Each structure stands twice: as structure tokens, then as C-alpha cells.
Image (cartoon, rainbow, N blue to C red):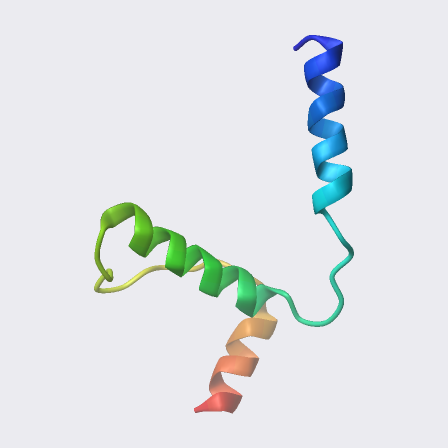
Length: 63
């Protein structure tokens, strides 16, 4: 990759990335599910998500 292209990527990341505070995994899972729906054109019957054990704790607590 040439240096100019690399620097463009770095500048985009510097502008777009901000620190996240709190529990971001549920939002990441929701975003992934929305992206899957967008890509396949309908709601999937099921998805398999591999993530930290904390998510299972929150899921069980919400039931």
C-alpha cells in the first residue's frame, strides 16, 4: 500500500473512531444482526454469536 493511501486511511480512522464507554457488545451484536438482514434481504431464522460470557448474563437477566 502506498504511503498516501495509508495516511488517508489513518486520517479517516482518527476522525471516525471515538472512545466507547460502557457495555458495547450488545450494540455490536445488534448492528451485526441488522447488517446480516441487509445483506441477505430478509430476517434470518437464527444466528450464532460468539462473544464474552457477560452477554449471556445480561440476556438471562433480561428474560
